[in-house]
Image (cartoon, rainbow, N blue to C red; front, side, top):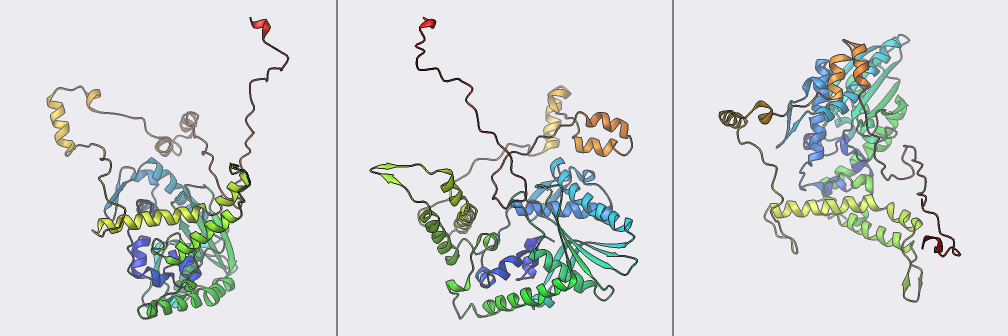
Length: 429
């Protein structure tokens, strides 16, 4: 089940836990707001479906290349890229199961398990769906519950440490299986294969999970539901909100949230207050690197808000509601395609076109070649592997706290020597 479907069943869902725990008025503010899923979110849902097929059937992702996965009104074809990234996650789950078994544990695996969160949020019938839950029972009586989450996005890296969504799923999984097991430890694992082959992990004792539920999640849920129940007759105040980049990122109300708009305006003002524009007469100095660094800290918040506002305006216009100053226009036409591939093939054959004129062929991808050769013929695969190349990731800007190591870039050196002043070039005449 997709996160969009999950939210239809739970106002206080695990996937939005950071938002409703951090900003107590956010849930009430989102009531009645449009919830149009983006293409990126739907692509993530398709990737989760592919991962489920693999784990349930014991297949590799390459077995499904060419299959179509429908999410809402969108269709996604499983291609080599999706199969490769999903396989990284699938391999990670399988390797973890094998590691538990090698350590002497018996393991149970639950894929896409629906878990009740009613005991945490108080919302009747509320549930969430965990991508994968592993229960490892060791001979000494130690039992660990491992909650594994697949993040298919390539944007901001997600850390498992103090991850509210992971904690919510872990608490729900413990509640689900507590009649049969007595857990000592919890392991939260987040795979984000489009950013890193190595997952983020965080282990904690069961007592810390209980503390999170009792001292953080439950009080926040109670407060959020109070606002939901009273919003119709008690308008929300700016002080009820706690806008910020992380909690506003996936909030449905951020495009029309007055608290976020005020926060963005205040943030911009504060940033530029820290950027004294030194002047001398009419001369203005261009921004230096120190000033650019100050501005960078607010770019994601501002950019996210701007995109949300643009998206909301589009929703309003498509619904026939006027927005002063803007209008809808026809976009660029889509790529041309056959209305019927079979009819096109028959017609082209009747025109006596040659096979190489009618069809295009390409060599299978390295991922598909590895699937065919690596296990059955390692020596042949080794020869093929020698022809495989992989481009390095392009440099991208990230904040200093990002866990990836900084690239060392050498300043460009001028290849041309400066001509000495006393050399008048007379020898060249």
